[in-house]
Length: 472
Image (cartoon, rainbow, N blue to C red):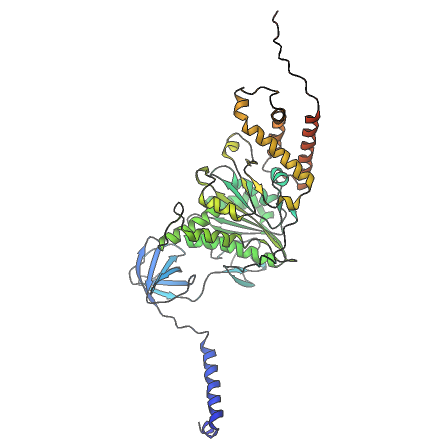
């Protein structure tokens, strides 16, 4: 102090100001943690007071009977926090301690992530030990400037003839598989998983049956497929928070590999379960329902998730994403299906009628579309695909008349050609689930079918006699 007192006053003031700044810098990372108390529980919603925490922050809830529950902040009102548990709730009592942790869930990413199966929080489920993370990324991801995205110009071989030729997929495209329950969307998703050429496959099994997780890994991916895959499983019995985190975790991992310059195939089954998880949380904390029980936040969350997929900046990798959408009651105007159709780069609709008639994969060519097909295929394929759809659609529109014998051959030459071509069109759409049809072969088959159709249409037809035959 003597030395300080001997310093002139202006310099002494500057010295004290410098010391105060240093103390503030040392204290700035520190955070005063104030415990709260659990005051209310309704359903899965927990209400705490006496503490402050940010949205998405994790809190530990400790009860006197050695109960430890982890919960995430999902909302607040005044001095009250709304929390949603990340696991099971057992043994909670009133006035349990609520301790904010100051952290949120992150995605562990690194070299040993390939071949692993994790849950929505990043914990391993395969019994192969912990994951040594080279980096941790926030689940919210990072926004990509739309003007910096590389345009979709390269076709992607998915191994399914009807999709390769009539609904061509581009690398970096985001497609939806729309179907009701039991129509075969999981089977089609499995076919594309096995047959699509990608550096890394990231699978998000969100809100589906727990039985399907092991079946998907053993029967569809197999040891060879798992070597280049990461599986994030948040089955139906997971909490709504874990189902949301499962979708975000899978997308964050896919972004990590895309930023490394790899071509990633992201498969999410299903987008509907993701939306339902957000609905459960939003309604529980008091958000009013808007459309068929879905609150507005659901329709904000879907594009926030989907827009993270796609091509990165020029020179970087890509994320080609397939999202399954469960159409409840086969209603294509279902709110989630309608919202997903508007934001995705195309949709493949599976028909229950085709599935019941034994046609697999049951792709409804009339109702399906790929919005980038015109940018990635040549004019010959486009012309052939349009002719195929026209003939197929014309037959379907008149099928009832044809089946009951109400149509007379020769009335409509175009319909006559569609009737003659129908067996070949149906056979073209059928494919064994264990058989891959390459992109080149799919295109050749379509062009060959188109050439045969044009040739048949140009041949002169025998006139139909209207003179009654005399019986002897």
